[in-house]
Figure 1 (tube, rainbow, N blue to C red):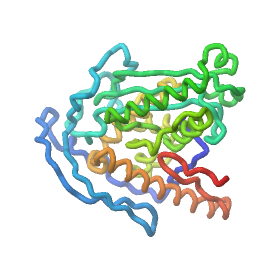
Figure 2: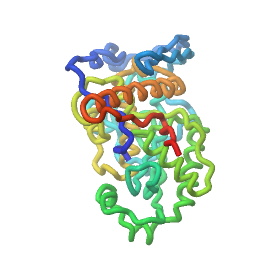
Figure 3: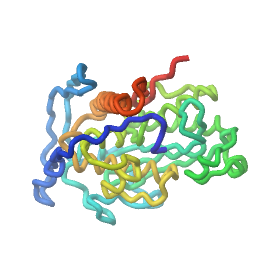
Figure 4: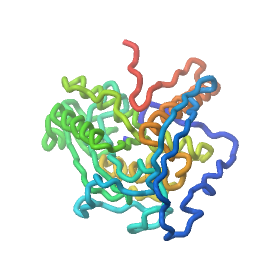
Length: 331
C-alpha cells in the first residue's frame, strides 16, 4: 500500500538540479563494452541524519557490475506479468552495463488493507515476489485474507475487495499473516534485499498484525530497500507527487493495476531497479549500508516535513519517526 498516514515527504525547495542525468557509468561506456573485473573498495559513507547528527558507515564493497548472483532463481515466464522497461522503453531491455549489485535480485512486498492506521488496520491482500536483474518475476505468492472485521467502503474503493468477498474467499487472517512472515524470513535468509514502497506502513502494520494473532514478528527486518525514501534523497528537488504511481511514471515502469498488491509490489521493485540504473554511483552500497543510509535519509525527511508543518499549519506538529518500522506510539 503506497500511501499512508506516516508522512515522509521532502517538500519543494528552490528549483535546482542535482545533475543525476549526467551521472551513470553506463552512459559513458560503449553499449556492448565488457564489464570491468570485480574490485573491492573500502570506504566510509557519511549519512546525514539531521542538521546536527551524522552516521558514518565503513564498508567493503565488491563491485559485481551487474552480475546476477548464481543463487538467483531461474527465470520462469509463467510468473512474469511484464518485464521491466528502462528509460520508458517496452519489452525486455538489455541488461545495463553497470548497476549496484543489490539490484540484481530482489524480493518485493506489498499489502492492501482495511485502512491507513497501522495500529488498527488489518491485512486484506498481500504479495511477495522475487525479481531477477531485468525486473522479471521469477516467483510470486499472493494471499487473500478474511480480516475478521468489516472492510470500510473507502478501502474497498482503493483495492476492490469487499467484506463479502473476503469472508467467502479469504483465509483466516492468522494463517495468512503467519505465512507472510515465514515467506519474508525465507527471503532474508536467502540473501534478498526486500523492496517495500513506504516501508514503515507495510512493515509496521505486519508487525502489529503478527502481535495481534500471536505470531512471532520479524525482528529488525533488514536489508530493506524503500524506493520512496531513495527517490526523495537522490532526486530531492523534483516537483509533484511521490506516490508509487507517480514514481513508476517518472522512471518508465508500467503500473496498470495500482493498489493490487501484486502489481504494486512488482512495480516498486522495478522502480528500485530503475533508481539503481539512473543513480548507480549514489546507490553503490552494500545492501546493509544502503539500509543504514535510508534510516538517516528518512529521519532527515521527517525533519523537513515536521519543520514545514510547524511553519505553515500546526506549531505543535510531530512527525512519526522510524524506518523501516515506525516507532511504537506511547501507551
